[in-house]
Image 1 (spheres, one colour):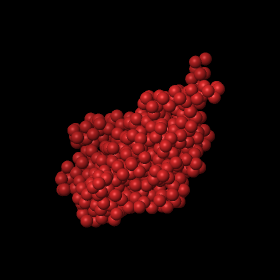
Image 2 (cartoon, chains in turn purple, yellow):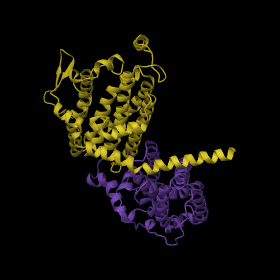
Image 3 (tube, one colour):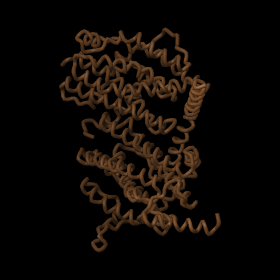
Image 4 (tube, one colour):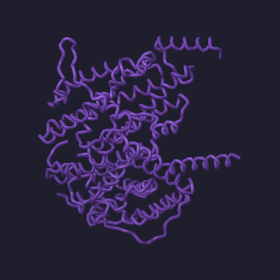
Amino acid sequence: MKENLYQYILGIADNSLILGQRLGELCGHGPSLETDIACTNISLDLLGQVRNYYQYAAKIANDGRTEDDIAMLRNEREYLNVLLVEQPNTDFGYIIARQFLFDVYHLMFLNELQKSNDLTLSAIATKSIKEVSYHQRFSSDWIKRLGDGTEESRSRIQSAIDELWTYTDELFHLTEADEVMVSEGIGVDVTKLKEHYYKKVNDILEEATIQVPESKYFQKGGKKGIHTEHMGYILTDLQYMQRTYPNMEW
Amino acid sequence: MSEEQIKNLEEQFEARIARDEKIEPKDWMPEKYRQTHIRQISQHAHSEIVGMLPEGNWITRAPSLRRKVALLAKVQDEAGHGLYLYSACETLGISRDVLYEQLHSGKAKYSSIFNYPTVTWADMGAIGWLVDGAAIINQVPLCSTSFGPYARAMVRVCKEESFHQRQGYEIMLKLCNGTPEQKEMAQDALNRWWWPSLMMLGPTDDASVHTEQSMKWKLKRKTNDELRQQFIDQTVPQADILGLTIPDPDLKWNEERGSYDFGEIDWDEFWQVVKGHGPCNKERMKARVGAWERGEWVRDAAMAYAEKQQERKEKQAV
């Protein structure tokens, strides 16, 4: 099996899976019907993309595991998503901040993945770009509304950005599998996206009258399967049926 | 306007309805027609929104990615139905905020079925199959109701509901063709959802206060008892295909009537839930009110931002 490619796909897909799962928690509890529908929509897009990635991963693994086995039957240390996406839905400010900080990265990443030598990954990227452009527009618009809205909304979104900022640097780390994939022209060299990312993020934050955090201390670990304490609970929900009723079809 | 003029208008109005013409928001209408429609359409909208909660309860725990995506899409459809129904209601001169207030204060009702808990995955199947099934029976006649915006909203709602019902039935079918444990889960869900689904079609005709007037305005085409019978006759053969047993020892085919006879419905339970004392009434309201209150600062921010943008535009124009 192409172990590096397999790991590389999981690294991409797990981000969308965990963020999609987080957004799924919100369905029916949003601040308005319109935002509720929009967040569900983003969750649906991400999980749709996830299915494409895991189906491809299952094909590469070629050991009888299905997309659901890969999505739901790994142990916590085997999930490779960044720490950012597992952060909780503390309030709508955090939800938007988390989304925005991920979307800007995600869109840049997919634009590059489109150029991959691997035709399946390139096709998934092309298909996903339209959706993720919409996600970025939605979250950027809300960053501006909350930043330049009321005093309360500015203070809430500022706290969310301040708190989540520490998880942004990890987006640009390369794992060993990533490095091999970059060298083979399959993977994206995310280190090259970093400057452009912070420029874009800073521009939008400034437009939204939000202060760009100055902290230089960053968290990492997700890409190596070392997660925050939230992760176990996310997986408890995600895996509940598959763990309780093994080997059944639904 | 003189009494005679009003009487005249009323006669013309009733004649239009009798000719199957649609009444549009700008047309003259009797106050009672307006109020009845606000009550029914908002109740319907609230049911969609509260109805998101019991199913939303299983989104994070859906057993496969395919099911998770389908469930998300379904609950999102319900939010969409809520949106167009609130919009249809707003054409009658009431705002969405006031309608929410009526829901949150308990003044407005929503379908009682959503006050039952969803305790296993099979409940996602049973709700789609039975609850959406009963809803369709209620709603299909509304596609030709007299108030234009409501009728048009219902055409779209019904299309999506019948898709949801098929999806629910398919979940049940998969369980019934699965392991004994899965089939047992399906039977248990049917046992819990059967009677509440029958109650969903409303009190018996002799206890229903709005039927007569609603029939006249085509807000209703069949009585509650007729709809209930239709639901039972349609659903029993579907249960047979699944190999499940309807939890009613008195259920029996009546050759003479060409329909199923069925057992006594526990109307005490029905009224208990309607009056706010069902298993989840309090949780459902807490969830709705909580979401609304937690969202207040967000809605305020959006409003303030829109005003600032407008001011900036006006300044630029000067």
